[in-house]
Image 1 (tube, rainbow, N blue to C red):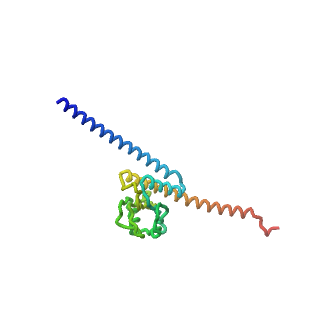
Image 2: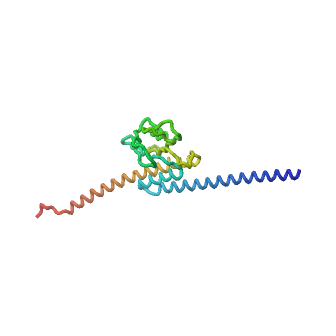
Image 3: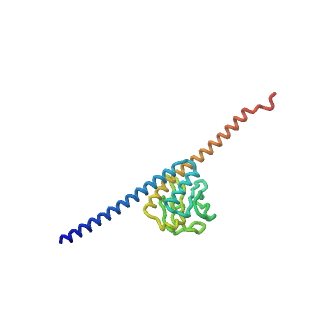
Length: 211
């Protein structure tokens, strides 16, 4: 009887050790994921240069989400269309510009919620997205990220991917919007500086009709 009691106690201790080891591994994984999210968000907000912001977002999509083929589209409110701003992998020219309206990209952007697929609707080229992620800041629509294929070592999305999708829909949208506004202001400032330099140049040029 005593031996049986010891066996039960050992079994209980082994079970508790296994549970604690599993919890410890989960905590380590969560800590690593949180660190990755922090580093990714810091990289995305590290600059106001549009091309660098876009490149940082693409690195997050490749290195953390594990996407192999994807496109980032920006929504142009004045022309009511999506224009492909960047991405990875071979894309079809038919998908470079997509009108805003009754289609997959537009519905995802209006809803503000990602669609994980494969989706039931294709793009103009006929390619079927694996996921579509909206990029918006409040009511201001910025664009969408369209994932077409994952890396060979990744067989699907997990809970950490859902956290990353939240990162992209929030931080990436804010960073892109800020960089676009900065680029517009920079262009306007350069135009005004050019006009000012031209005006000063004319002021400093002597009038050939004098004398």
